[in-house]
Image (cartoon, rainbow, N blue to C red):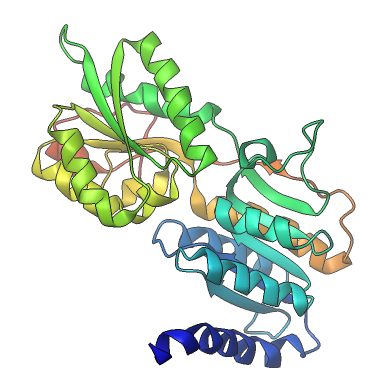
Length: 323
């Protein structure tokens, strides 16, 4: 019991001790915040750091200091990390995934925030009455239009003979982007003569149970939407689907690397790289002139050859092998 009481204090001390020495150096400091641990999402950080390096901001050359923190899917920890970066007046905040971006927006109106793996301000519900996002928000965003193409891939590839295709989905009720994606897909499914069965999943601990419930309903395929919980639980979802001979499709190229059949969506690495280019421009001038939130530029049609072969799915020529 005593340990539980002092744990928050220990976390605070760890964060402060590891950050203070670097923030005092005479180099720009980037506070990079990941909301949770995920192999796909981490590619955004890699792209962001590479973009800084290509623009002359390298930790190896001591021309920048990147203080990286991962909240491990804990809102209190996420808040604590951002509070500290704000109190230390880092030069800029880099935020990966919606939770981290929204938390940063709530805590500072002065420090520039360069978001990635996050949707539009409207989707995050941080836009003002006229639809404009926070004045200190920059980086790269995504809308939901691309999901139409991603979802429409499934009936084209599976081509059921006369029967209606049934696709299973999992969504997080607490994530606006997840709920919006579900609504959009349900509207599209009606036009494609596809039946959608969707079940809520708000915790990765229930992923196997919820996935099995979908499989018990006789789904023909599973569609993984852009949802933090789905990302975190993907291996569990894919394993259960594979055991039941149900292919997994997605809108995220990174999940194809992890076992989905195919996707049309943003390259997560390039998403981070695009935001990193903006951040580098700011570090060069310490001015935000000409900077604004941009739509993600690089989307790809990718497939996993081994998984496509397993399910005997013929992939169109305009898809490339995932790297």
